[in-house]
Image (cartoon, rainbow, N blue to C red; front, top):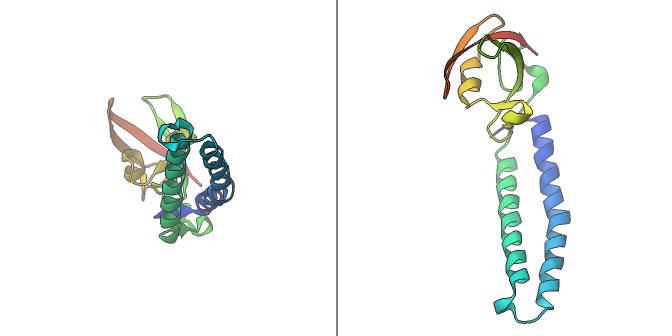
Amino acid sequence: MLLTYSGLKEREDELRHLKTVKRKEIAEKIKEARNKGDLSENAEYDAAKEEQAKYEARIAELEKMLRAAVVIDEEDLDKDVVGIGSKVTLFSEEFGEDEEYVIVGSAEANPAGGKISNESPLGSVILGRRVGDEVFVDAPAGIIKYVVKSIA
């Protein structure tokens, strides 16, 4: 599991929040629902238990992710070649404007936030590329040509 330092911190913060805040909130909801009587027909109790299961699954997922994390030291990145942790500016005539992305591991990917996975169609074709390189991505709309404009 590849993570940048910021991605690692985000997941550690989320885990801490789930364990300290959300667990207490849900325990209180379950307690309140229990106090309302018969649990067999108590929709609030059922909803609280479902919410508890959802958060416990996320806690387990985050703990597993953090145990397997390999942190990419962004300061050690080669700024001449696109790699995980690189901030890349691409240009496509198709869209007529620059697009900026940070290449991250799949756990951190958030395309709407400008973070694309190294395993995504675009991320995988720009890995190892240099400024000026042209790449072609097979997208649902067809083949799109990009030019790597900068790497940071």
